[in-house]
Image 1 (cartoon, one colour):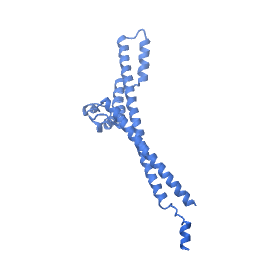
Image 2: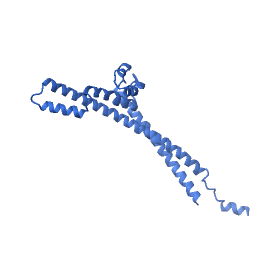
Image 3: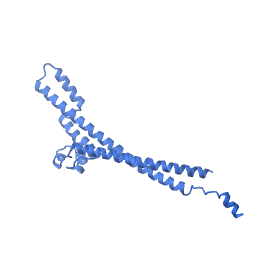
Image 4: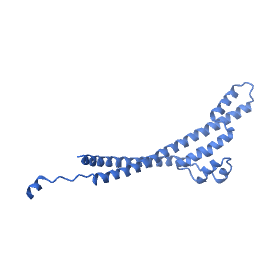
Length: 190
């Protein structure tokens, strides 16, 4: 009796996992396709070798080097550009300060009646640059996040299909119960 229950459960779970696996792979591919379409529309080119060489950070240069001159179409490219190109330029422009710190300095300067108007304008320009950099970084990292979710879904889908196939083999193989001989067949042999 237990063998019959395990066999039936194996078959049911095999079918369910195969359906879930296929759906996860389709969803993951959709996420990758959607991110690629959105990034392609923006026509962002990855930095060239001279731009990468100008960075003072070897880690940033190493992260960007595989994508030299390519059009940005993938999540990993978006993450590298956001974290190792835009961020590096933002930190260089602000002297290592975040948008929040730059904005606080601008607000303080703009409220100071004795502040030099040129300094206030410089602070306003830096604040605007930092805001735009943070906004673009956030959008690119969002694209990377969805790409990553798509990648995880694909791997989960593959895993679900593998487990589903194994359960299917077990359910329709070793855990299969033998059919009881029919009553008609038993009476004809007697």
